[in-house]
Length: 456
Image (cartoon, rainbow, N blue to C red; front, side):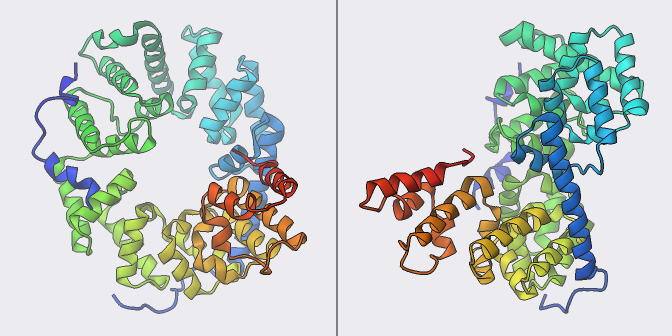
C-alpha cells in the first residue's frame, strides 16, 4: 500500500518544486498607530510579572525544569494559582500520575486556564460513562491532551475513540498495520497516521495532524499525493517542518499554490526565493495576499527600504505571520533598552529572527551583556545573533570564564570582543580561552567554571 509514495512516476508539477534547494523608498517615522514607549514599558513590566509567576508556579507545582517552564510561559500566562490549582486537583482526582500531568501541561499548557468544573470535569465524566477505564482515560488524555480543548461531547467522543484505535493498532499490528480495512473516514485516518508513524514521524506530530482542523490525514488519494510531494521535496519526517509542509500541501491545490507564488513574484521575489522560504517555514504559504502586504508595509514603517524588507522575508519568512502590533512591540522593546531606531533597523537586517524573540528574552540577554559584562550596546548591534543564543548553554558559561580571566589579570585587553567570545563554537572558545594556558591547574579551574551548572 502507498507504494507510489516511494516509487512510481514523478508528477509534472513536482518538477518545479524540486528546485527548492536552489535557490520603495525611505519612509517617514512610525505612524500614530504605534503605541508610545512609556506604554510599552508598562506592558513589558506587566508581561514580565506574569511570566515570572507562571515560571515559579510551574516549577513549584509540577517540578518542571526552569528552562522548560520559561518556554511554557511564552505560551500561557497565569495570573494566580487558583484556576491552575483547580485543574491539577481535578486531574489528580481522575488518577493521572505526576508524570502524566507534567506531560499534559507541557504539551497543552492552555489547559491550566480552562474552567476545571464547567469545562474539563464534564468531558472527563462523559468519557467515563462511555466505558473508558481509568487506565485508558489517563493514557489517551496524556497522549493527546488537546482533546479536552475540543467543544461538544460528540467531538470529544469521536477524537477519543479514534486516538484509542490508533494507539491499540500501533501496539498490536506493528508492521502489518497496512492490513487495516479501507473505506470509512475513520479507517482512513488510522491507516494514514500509521503510515506516517512507519516513516518515522514522532507521535507528538502524528496526533497534532489527527486533531488538526485542516484534516491533513483524511482520505486516501489526496493524502497519498500530498505525502508523495512532501517526501520528494526532501523534508525530514522526524521534524515539525515535515508536518507543516504536509498540512500546507494537503490544504492547497496546485493552482492555489501557483497563485500564492505569483503574489510573491509581483512583490519582487523570484520563484526560487519563494521555495527556499517554503523550505525554511512551510506554513508561510498559508498567509493571504492582504497579510503579506500588511507585513511588508509595517516593516517599511520601521525604517526598512523595500529591498531590505524582501531580504528580511527571505531570511525569516515566519515574520509574515506577525501582527503589526507584534512588530511594533518588538521595536519598542529595543528602543526601551536604549537602541535607536536606526540601530533597530540594522539589527533586523542582520538578524531578522529578532522580530520573533520575546521581550523577556531580549531584555534578559541585553541587560546581562551590557550591564553585567560591560560590553557597549553597539556590540549587540554589530553581533545581533547573540540574542538568539541560549543563556544557560552558551552566554553565561562563556562569560563566567571571561570574568575569571579578567579577575586574574590574564586577558590583555579590558574585555575581548563579544563576537570573539560568543559567536565561535564551543571547541574554538575552549581553545582560545581555556586550553591555551601553560598552567594546567588553571586550565582545570577554568574548565570547571565553564561546565559548572551548564545545561547540555
